[in-house]
Amino acid sequence: MTAAPTGAAPRGTPTLGDFTAGQLRRLAAVAGLSGTDTAAYVRVLTDSLGPVAERPLSLPPPTRTFLSDDHTPVEYSLSFRSDAPPALRVLLEPGCGAGSLARNGRAGLESVRQMARRWDFATDALDEIEDLFLPPDPHGPLALWCALELRPGGVPGVKVYLNPAANGAERSAATVREALHRLGHRGAFAVLPQGAGFPFLALDLGEWAQPRVKVYVRHDHLTAGRAGRLSRMDQGPGPAAIEGFFRAAVAPGPDTTGLDRRPGLSCHSFTDPAAARPSGFTLHIPVRDYARHDGEALARAASVLRHHGTDPSVLVRALAAVTRRRPEDGVGLLAYLALAHQRDRPPRVTAYLSAEAYAVRPAVPGSAPTIVPVG
Image 1 (cartoon, rainbow, N blue to C red):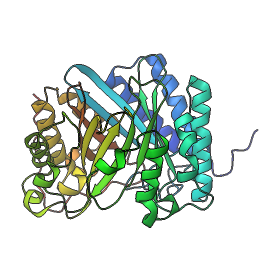
Image 2: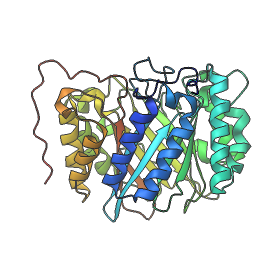
Image 3: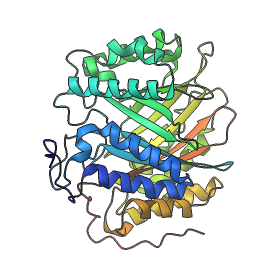
Protein backbone atom coordinates (compact mmCIF):
# COMPACT_ATOMS: atom_id res chain seq x y z
CA MET A 1 0.00 0.00 0.00
CA THR A 2 1.42 3.39 -1.07
CA ALA A 3 1.16 6.28 1.35
CA ALA A 4 -0.57 9.44 0.18
CA PRO A 5 1.69 12.47 -0.47
CA THR A 6 2.04 14.96 2.36
CA GLY A 7 -1.12 17.04 2.58
CA ALA A 8 -2.97 14.72 0.19
CA ALA A 9 -6.45 13.50 0.95
CA PRO A 10 -7.17 9.90 1.92
CA ARG A 11 -8.86 7.96 -0.85
CA GLY A 12 -12.49 9.05 -1.25
CA THR A 13 -12.01 12.46 0.41
CA PRO A 14 -12.98 15.44 -1.81
CA THR A 15 -9.95 17.39 -3.01
CA LEU A 16 -9.38 20.73 -4.70
CA GLY A 17 -8.49 18.87 -7.89
CA ASP A 18 -11.67 16.79 -7.79
CA PHE A 19 -13.81 19.86 -7.18
CA THR A 20 -12.38 22.04 -9.94
CA ALA A 21 -12.12 19.15 -12.41
CA GLY A 22 -15.82 18.46 -11.97
CA GLN A 23 -16.67 22.11 -12.55
CA LEU A 24 -14.51 22.21 -15.66
CA ARG A 25 -16.11 19.08 -17.12
CA ARG A 26 -19.59 20.50 -16.69
CA LEU A 27 -18.60 23.91 -18.07
CA ALA A 28 -16.95 22.26 -21.08
CA ALA A 29 -20.24 20.51 -21.83
CA VAL A 30 -22.04 23.86 -21.73
CA ALA A 31 -19.43 25.34 -24.10
CA GLY A 32 -19.76 22.40 -26.51
CA LEU A 33 -16.27 20.93 -26.15
CA SER A 34 -15.81 17.27 -27.03
CA GLY A 35 -15.23 14.60 -24.41
CA THR A 36 -11.68 14.08 -25.65
CA ASP A 37 -10.81 17.75 -25.44
CA THR A 38 -12.47 18.04 -22.05
CA ALA A 39 -10.47 15.14 -20.62
CA ALA A 40 -7.23 16.68 -21.91
CA TYR A 41 -8.02 20.08 -20.41
CA VAL A 42 -8.99 18.58 -17.06
CA ARG A 43 -5.58 16.91 -16.93
CA VAL A 44 -3.89 20.21 -17.73
CA LEU A 45 -5.80 21.91 -14.92
CA THR A 46 -4.93 19.35 -12.26
CA ASP A 47 -1.32 19.03 -13.46
CA SER A 48 -0.90 22.81 -13.37
CA LEU A 49 -2.20 23.00 -9.80
CA GLY A 50 0.50 20.54 -8.81
CA PRO A 51 0.46 19.02 -5.30
CA VAL A 52 -2.39 21.23 -4.08
CA ALA A 53 -4.73 19.38 -6.45
CA GLU A 54 -4.57 16.51 -3.92
CA ARG A 55 -5.26 18.78 -0.95
CA PRO A 56 -8.51 17.97 0.93
CA LEU A 57 -11.20 20.62 0.68
CA SER A 58 -11.68 20.27 4.44
CA LEU A 59 -8.34 22.07 4.90
CA PRO A 60 -8.01 25.86 4.46
CA PRO A 61 -6.96 27.19 1.04
CA PRO A 62 -3.32 26.40 0.22
CA THR A 63 -2.56 30.14 0.07
CA ARG A 64 -4.45 33.40 0.46
CA THR A 65 -4.40 33.93 -3.27
CA PHE A 66 -5.57 37.24 -4.69
CA LEU A 67 -7.17 35.36 -7.60
CA SER A 68 -10.57 34.90 -5.88
CA ASP A 69 -12.40 36.16 -2.82
CA ASP A 70 -12.41 32.75 -1.10
CA HIS A 71 -8.78 32.05 -2.16
CA THR A 72 -9.57 29.27 -4.64
CA PRO A 73 -6.63 29.36 -7.09
CA VAL A 74 -8.98 28.82 -10.06
CA GLU A 75 -11.50 31.07 -11.84
CA TYR A 76 -13.57 30.42 -14.97
CA SER A 77 -14.89 32.76 -17.64
CA LEU A 78 -17.13 32.56 -20.66
CA SER A 79 -16.64 35.02 -23.49
CA PHE A 80 -19.57 35.74 -25.81
CA ARG A 81 -19.60 37.18 -29.31
CA SER A 82 -22.63 37.47 -31.56
CA ASP A 83 -20.83 35.76 -34.45
CA ALA A 84 -19.19 32.83 -32.64
CA PRO A 85 -19.85 30.12 -30.02
CA PRO A 86 -18.93 31.06 -26.43
CA ALA A 87 -15.28 30.60 -25.50
CA LEU A 88 -14.49 28.92 -22.18
CA ARG A 89 -11.41 29.98 -20.25
CA VAL A 90 -9.83 28.97 -16.98
CA LEU A 91 -7.50 31.20 -14.95
CA LEU A 92 -5.24 29.56 -12.38
CA GLU A 93 -2.28 30.19 -10.13
CA PRO A 94 0.11 27.33 -10.91
CA GLY A 95 2.48 28.21 -8.06
CA CYS A 96 -0.16 28.40 -5.33
CA GLY A 97 0.93 26.78 -2.11
CA ALA A 98 4.63 27.08 -3.00
CA GLY A 99 5.37 28.74 0.35
CA SER A 100 6.65 32.14 -0.76
CA LEU A 101 5.96 34.61 -3.54
CA ALA A 102 9.38 33.96 -5.08
CA ARG A 103 8.84 30.18 -5.16
CA ASN A 104 5.30 30.78 -6.41
CA GLY A 105 6.68 32.71 -9.37
CA ARG A 106 9.33 30.12 -10.17
CA ALA A 107 6.77 27.32 -10.06
CA GLY A 108 4.41 29.31 -12.27
CA LEU A 109 7.16 30.04 -14.76
CA GLU A 110 8.13 26.37 -14.95
CA SER A 111 4.48 25.43 -15.50
CA VAL A 112 4.27 27.85 -18.44
CA ARG A 113 7.51 26.48 -19.89
CA GLN A 114 6.12 22.96 -19.65
CA MET A 115 3.05 24.12 -21.58
CA ALA A 116 5.35 25.66 -24.20
CA ARG A 117 7.16 22.35 -24.64
CA ARG A 118 3.89 20.41 -24.74
CA TRP A 119 2.20 22.63 -27.33
CA ASP A 120 5.36 23.82 -29.11
CA PHE A 121 5.08 27.57 -28.71
CA ALA A 122 7.72 30.22 -28.06
CA THR A 123 8.09 32.16 -24.83
CA ASP A 124 10.33 34.89 -26.25
CA ALA A 125 8.11 37.74 -25.06
CA LEU A 126 8.00 36.36 -21.52
CA ASP A 127 11.74 35.74 -21.53
CA GLU A 128 12.35 39.35 -22.57
CA ILE A 129 10.68 40.77 -19.46
CA GLU A 130 11.07 37.95 -16.91
CA ASP A 131 13.55 39.88 -14.76
CA LEU A 132 11.14 42.83 -14.41
CA PHE A 133 8.29 40.76 -13.02
CA LEU A 134 9.97 37.80 -11.30
CA PRO A 135 12.80 39.29 -9.22
CA PRO A 136 14.53 37.34 -6.43
CA ASP A 137 12.54 39.11 -3.70
CA PRO A 138 9.16 40.02 -5.23
CA HIS A 139 6.47 42.23 -3.70
CA GLY A 140 2.75 42.47 -4.25
CA PRO A 141 -0.32 40.25 -4.25
CA LEU A 142 0.72 37.79 -6.99
CA ALA A 143 3.67 36.47 -8.95
CA LEU A 144 2.28 34.76 -12.06
CA TRP A 145 -1.14 33.61 -13.18
CA CYS A 146 -1.91 31.61 -16.30
CA ALA A 147 -5.13 31.61 -18.33
CA LEU A 148 -6.09 28.98 -20.88
CA GLU A 149 -8.65 29.58 -23.62
CA LEU A 150 -10.01 26.07 -24.13
CA ARG A 151 -10.33 25.59 -27.88
CA PRO A 152 -11.60 22.60 -29.87
CA GLY A 153 -8.72 20.30 -30.75
CA GLY A 154 -7.06 20.15 -27.35
CA VAL A 155 -4.56 23.00 -27.83
CA PRO A 156 -5.48 26.11 -25.81
CA GLY A 157 -4.55 29.71 -26.20
CA VAL A 158 -2.24 30.61 -23.32
CA LYS A 159 -2.13 33.94 -21.47
CA VAL A 160 0.26 34.91 -18.69
CA TYR A 161 -0.56 37.58 -16.10
CA LEU A 162 2.30 39.35 -14.32
CA ASN A 163 2.55 41.79 -11.42
CA PRO A 164 3.91 45.29 -12.20
CA ALA A 165 4.41 45.88 -8.46
CA ALA A 166 6.91 43.01 -8.18
CA ASN A 167 9.72 45.51 -7.48
CA GLY A 168 7.52 47.71 -5.30
CA ALA A 169 4.25 49.52 -5.95
CA GLU A 170 6.09 52.80 -6.38
CA ARG A 171 7.92 51.32 -9.38
CA SER A 172 4.86 49.84 -11.12
CA ALA A 173 4.61 52.56 -13.76
CA ALA A 174 8.32 52.36 -14.57
CA THR A 175 8.09 48.58 -14.81
CA VAL A 176 5.17 48.74 -17.25
CA ARG A 177 6.93 51.41 -19.32
CA GLU A 178 10.13 49.36 -19.54
CA ALA A 179 8.24 46.16 -20.40
CA LEU A 180 6.35 47.84 -23.24
CA HIS A 181 9.60 49.35 -24.52
CA ARG A 182 11.39 45.98 -24.55
CA LEU A 183 8.45 44.35 -26.35
CA GLY A 184 8.62 46.95 -29.12
CA HIS A 185 5.65 49.13 -28.10
CA ARG A 186 7.78 52.18 -27.41
CA GLY A 187 5.02 54.77 -27.54
CA ALA A 188 2.37 52.68 -25.77
CA PHE A 189 2.82 53.87 -22.22
CA ALA A 190 2.26 57.50 -23.16
CA VAL A 191 -1.25 56.84 -24.51
CA LEU A 192 -2.57 54.97 -21.46
CA PRO A 193 -5.28 56.74 -19.43
CA GLN A 194 -4.58 57.99 -15.94
CA GLY A 195 -5.54 55.68 -13.12
CA ALA A 196 -4.73 54.59 -9.60
CA GLY A 197 -2.24 51.87 -10.50
CA PHE A 198 -1.33 49.00 -12.80
CA PRO A 199 -2.57 45.67 -11.35
CA PHE A 200 -1.53 43.42 -14.27
CA LEU A 201 0.44 43.15 -17.47
CA ALA A 202 -0.56 40.19 -19.62
CA LEU A 203 0.95 38.41 -22.63
CA ASP A 204 -0.62 36.13 -25.22
CA LEU A 205 1.60 33.09 -25.86
CA GLY A 206 1.14 30.37 -28.45
CA GLU A 207 -1.34 30.38 -31.31
CA TRP A 208 -3.16 33.71 -31.52
CA ALA A 209 -4.20 35.52 -34.69
CA GLN A 210 -2.71 38.72 -33.23
CA PRO A 211 -0.77 38.14 -29.98
CA ARG A 212 -1.44 40.95 -27.52
CA VAL A 213 0.40 42.76 -24.79
CA LYS A 214 -2.30 43.93 -22.37
CA VAL A 215 -1.95 46.62 -19.72
CA TYR A 216 -4.56 46.85 -16.95
CA VAL A 217 -5.25 50.17 -15.22
CA ARG A 218 -7.15 50.52 -11.93
CA HIS A 219 -9.79 53.26 -11.63
CA ASP A 220 -11.02 54.18 -8.17
CA HIS A 221 -14.49 55.74 -7.81
CA LEU A 222 -15.15 55.20 -11.52
CA THR A 223 -18.37 56.71 -12.92
CA ALA A 224 -20.14 56.03 -16.21
CA GLY A 225 -18.99 59.36 -17.60
CA ARG A 226 -15.33 58.71 -16.77
CA ALA A 227 -15.57 55.13 -18.05
CA GLY A 228 -16.80 56.39 -21.40
CA ARG A 229 -13.58 58.36 -21.88
CA LEU A 230 -11.09 55.57 -21.09
CA SER A 231 -10.69 53.96 -24.51
CA ARG A 232 -7.58 54.94 -26.44
CA MET A 233 -8.38 53.03 -29.65
CA ASP A 234 -8.41 54.98 -32.92
CA GLN A 235 -11.65 53.35 -34.07
CA GLY A 236 -12.91 52.11 -30.74
CA PRO A 237 -16.26 52.29 -28.99
CA GLY A 238 -17.92 55.64 -28.49
CA PRO A 239 -18.50 56.94 -24.97
CA ALA A 240 -22.23 56.11 -25.13
CA ALA A 241 -21.57 52.38 -25.64
CA ILE A 242 -19.20 52.19 -22.66
CA GLU A 243 -21.43 54.30 -20.44
CA GLY A 244 -24.40 52.09 -21.31
CA PHE A 245 -22.49 48.95 -20.36
CA PHE A 246 -21.33 50.54 -17.09
CA ARG A 247 -24.89 51.46 -16.11
CA ALA A 248 -26.26 48.03 -17.05
CA ALA A 249 -23.56 46.28 -14.99
CA VAL A 250 -23.74 48.32 -11.79
CA ALA A 251 -27.39 49.52 -11.75
CA PRO A 252 -28.37 53.06 -10.69
CA GLY A 253 -26.43 53.61 -7.45
CA PRO A 254 -22.75 53.80 -8.47
CA ASP A 255 -23.63 55.63 -11.70
CA THR A 256 -23.45 58.95 -9.87
CA THR A 257 -21.39 58.06 -6.76
CA GLY A 258 -18.75 56.03 -8.57
CA LEU A 259 -17.41 52.56 -7.77
CA ASP A 260 -16.67 53.16 -4.09
CA ARG A 261 -16.02 49.52 -3.13
CA ARG A 262 -13.91 47.46 -5.51
CA PRO A 263 -12.50 49.60 -8.35
CA GLY A 264 -13.14 49.22 -12.06
CA LEU A 265 -10.38 48.12 -14.44
CA SER A 266 -9.60 49.14 -17.98
CA CYS A 267 -7.46 46.96 -20.24
CA HIS A 268 -5.56 48.25 -23.26
CA SER A 269 -4.31 45.72 -25.83
CA PHE A 270 -1.33 46.35 -28.09
CA THR A 271 -0.69 44.17 -31.14
CA ASP A 272 1.23 46.27 -33.67
CA PRO A 273 4.48 47.88 -32.46
CA ALA A 274 4.25 50.35 -35.35
CA ALA A 275 0.83 51.61 -34.26
CA ALA A 276 0.61 54.61 -31.97
CA ARG A 277 -2.54 53.44 -30.20
CA PRO A 278 -3.92 50.18 -28.78
CA SER A 279 -5.95 47.84 -30.97
CA GLY A 280 -8.24 46.77 -28.13
CA PHE A 281 -10.05 48.13 -25.08
CA THR A 282 -11.93 46.33 -22.29
CA LEU A 283 -13.83 47.65 -19.30
CA HIS A 284 -14.06 45.27 -16.31
CA ILE A 285 -16.78 45.86 -13.71
CA PRO A 286 -16.64 43.94 -10.36
CA VAL A 287 -20.38 43.26 -10.42
CA ARG A 288 -20.24 41.19 -7.23
CA ASP A 289 -19.55 44.28 -5.16
CA TYR A 290 -22.52 46.19 -6.54
CA ALA A 291 -25.23 43.52 -6.42
CA ARG A 292 -27.24 42.21 -3.48
CA HIS A 293 -27.03 38.61 -4.71
CA ASP A 294 -26.02 36.64 -7.79
CA GLY A 295 -29.59 36.55 -9.10
CA GLU A 296 -29.38 40.31 -9.44
CA ALA A 297 -25.93 40.14 -11.05
CA LEU A 298 -27.15 37.47 -13.46
CA ALA A 299 -30.14 39.59 -14.46
CA ARG A 300 -27.78 42.43 -15.36
CA ALA A 301 -25.50 40.09 -17.30
CA ALA A 302 -28.49 38.70 -19.19
CA SER A 303 -29.52 42.21 -20.17
CA VAL A 304 -26.01 43.01 -21.45
CA LEU A 305 -25.82 39.76 -23.42
CA ARG A 306 -29.19 40.30 -25.07
CA HIS A 307 -28.16 43.84 -25.99
CA HIS A 308 -25.15 42.40 -27.81
CA GLY A 309 -27.13 39.71 -29.62
CA THR A 310 -26.21 36.72 -27.46
CA ASP A 311 -28.41 34.12 -25.76
CA PRO A 312 -28.11 34.53 -21.96
CA SER A 313 -29.38 31.00 -21.28
CA VAL A 314 -25.83 29.73 -21.90
CA LEU A 315 -24.60 31.78 -18.93
CA VAL A 316 -27.48 30.51 -16.79
CA ARG A 317 -26.43 26.92 -17.58
CA ALA A 318 -22.80 27.80 -16.85
CA LEU A 319 -23.65 29.02 -13.36
CA ALA A 320 -25.55 25.81 -12.73
CA ALA A 321 -22.48 23.86 -13.90
CA VAL A 322 -20.30 25.60 -11.30
CA THR A 323 -22.60 25.27 -8.28
CA ARG A 324 -25.87 23.73 -7.13
CA ARG A 325 -26.81 26.70 -4.97
CA ARG A 326 -29.41 29.21 -6.10
CA PRO A 327 -27.99 32.51 -7.35
CA GLU A 328 -30.08 34.30 -4.75
CA ASP A 329 -28.31 32.46 -1.92
CA GLY A 330 -24.98 34.26 -2.25
CA VAL A 331 -23.06 36.96 -4.07
CA GLY A 332 -19.72 36.58 -5.82
CA LEU A 333 -20.34 33.60 -8.08
CA LEU A 334 -20.51 36.08 -10.95
CA ALA A 335 -17.42 38.10 -10.10
CA TYR A 336 -16.83 40.44 -13.04
CA LEU A 337 -18.58 41.51 -16.22
CA ALA A 338 -16.41 42.85 -19.02
CA LEU A 339 -17.09 44.42 -22.40
CA ALA A 340 -14.20 44.07 -24.85
CA HIS A 341 -13.64 45.83 -28.15
CA GLN A 342 -10.99 44.67 -30.59
CA ARG A 343 -10.28 46.29 -33.93
CA ASP A 344 -12.29 44.75 -36.82
CA ARG A 345 -14.27 42.42 -34.52
CA PRO A 346 -17.71 42.57 -32.90
CA PRO A 347 -17.82 43.50 -29.19
CA ARG A 348 -17.26 40.63 -26.74
CA VAL A 349 -18.97 40.21 -23.36
CA THR A 350 -17.13 38.14 -20.76
CA ALA A 351 -18.57 36.81 -17.51
CA TYR A 352 -16.09 35.69 -14.83
CA LEU A 353 -17.25 32.86 -12.57
CA SER A 354 -15.86 32.05 -9.11
CA ALA A 355 -15.18 28.43 -8.21
CA GLU A 356 -16.26 28.94 -4.57
CA ALA A 357 -14.35 25.85 -3.46
CA TYR A 358 -13.91 27.16 0.10
CA ALA A 359 -16.63 29.70 0.85
CA VAL A 360 -19.76 31.40 -0.46
CA ARG A 361 -20.08 35.10 0.22
CA PRO A 362 -23.51 35.70 1.81
CA ALA A 363 -26.14 37.69 -0.03
CA VAL A 364 -26.96 41.13 1.35
CA PRO A 365 -29.42 40.57 4.22
CA GLY A 366 -33.02 41.30 3.36
CA SER A 367 -32.46 41.30 -0.40
CA ALA A 368 -35.44 40.05 -2.37
CA PRO A 369 -35.13 37.23 -4.92
CA THR A 370 -34.76 38.32 -8.53
CA ILE A 371 -36.41 36.47 -11.42
CA VAL A 372 -33.78 36.14 -14.14
CA PRO A 373 -35.12 36.53 -17.70
CA VAL A 374 -33.39 34.17 -20.12
CA GLY A 375 -35.55 34.41 -23.20
